[in-house]
Image (cartoon, rainbow, N blue to C red; front, side, top):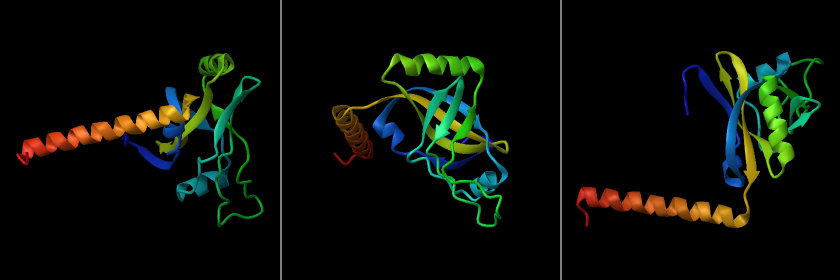
Length: 157
């Protein structure tokens, strides 16, 4: 998903496996200078990250941005809670959906868009083990169908 002016920093590869994605939002993120410099080096991990809504604000927790190597005593804390920047209407919508139950906010990816750091945030529902197995079986079946079609086109069968 490479768009013009978009440079990926980190992706949460397990998110689409563990959650079924309902809706996707793009959010800005409030960072300090050394965090941006560390992100420009391509260092970040979304593995344990999740978002919460507290007092009408959305917070990203568990995001790991390592300390900037050339930083001084002004360096940031690697796992600090960071504020996500969304419109008020989007926040109110997210509050309603997460309070409804069984839905959570999961970051899918982090990227630079025209020089600004953005987070792709998903409203998601957790998958059960049988859902995951079903998705894997469906993907394998589709792969086998395309493989068979490729063979028939090439005249191998």
